[in-house]
Image (cartoon, rainbow over all chains, first blue to last red; front, side):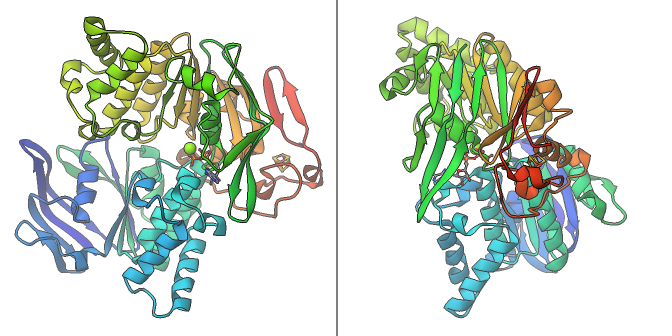
Length: 234
Length: 299
Ligand SMILES: Nc1ncnc2c1ncn2[C@@H]1O[C@H](COP(=O)(O)OP(=O)(O)OP(=O)(O)O)[C@@H](O)[C@H]1O
Ligand code: SF4
Ligand SMILES: [Mg+2]
């Protein structure tokens, strides 16, 4: 479980988040809904250590990730991974897609042997529906939707316990979006991870998530909770 | 007629061979008309936009196509370079990407206005004027900002202001509404329509809401045009199975998936995923035209 306790954040005099308390359970999909620029992305950035928090604490499985007194602990924070809206930004233009996946595997020592490395990369490619052709391409030669699936694959390689999708499907057409999200829904169960879907698409959040929070007065308010995961929706 | 476009064949050289990305996509856009090209990711939308401006990537070739812009043949690269930015304006997906990060907003606008022959006070006035038209209330405050100081929405308005510097007869917007919320998306189409009333407008999008706000829609599936017609019809009651699948994949319609069911055979680009495919779909697929509506489907 990833927990946020009494988190506040302001930029200069502007208060963006005030006393936010949220908890992301594994195996569940949480949605955050609100207008562009309201503070959804700020929360995502704080969760993965790109932005400092003003006040409060974040815990992963009971371990402190960061607080107003303790700097962000990368090792614990690794359990939280974010996919952003601009997928190309996460890709090195002069590196083939396959190579960038290998790099993550070897850098993070996710496999012992060459053969094992290959298996890890191949598995993730199958999981995210990436063709062999795509793995052999440079970022400039793949379309936006393909790039977004690569970005998600890169995050999943690190076996996150909380995957944050910050407008990560707004680049995608509806059918690719339906495919990618269906895949993610499967993984939520299979890998027992939590997902935080941040979007300004109300219909999407309401249809896809187990519980939905909206941004009101610098805080996130629970709007509704689905009793059971609605499998028919996908 | 502002633009008469025939794609011919657009092919990419890839490792160990080549691959057809777009084939036989033909369309015309009249003065003042808004055409939306809609399709899934990888359908070839961006390639089509780039081919009009002759900005295709190095390893990509176009053969047998023809592009005529206001009576001028665009196959000559020199001609295109002269027209681009003056008579053809391009509004890209991410506004910030096409702005030089080391130059303030005003210099981007000054450059474009100078190209149009403006100088001195007239140039400065036009600069402010365009920013205001593009939706900035306090235009003077924007002038001295660097691109990275702009939010996504602001950067987009700057690219609109840049387009306003030209006398554009054709505006190409490639996924320019991504990341905007629903209200902003339709406002964008409206704003472009009002600012450039007589220009031909090509909206490249994967968003049915944006496409629905246009006059006509062309639907692309794996580089082929499978349906085209009046926006009101194509966006609500499409006749081609592929377009229908795009509608049922919308969140409000239950996000239905269209998995691959079988191997690609024959001519129809949707054949691998089509639920109602039959024997006839393996042969040549006819083009069915009825009162301004076109579909390519065996059924
Ligand atoms: N330089 C290139 N070399 C080889 N293939 C390419 C190149 N650029 C694009 N492609 C391929 O061409 C196809 C069409 O790409 P295009 O960028 O036009 O798609 P799109 O419809 O704009 O998709 P999106 O909605 O994701 O932006 C994709 O399958 C892509 O992988
Ligand atoms: S031609 Fe056949 S396979 Fe293609 S869309 Fe029509 S019914 Fe489906
Ligand atoms: Mg594109």
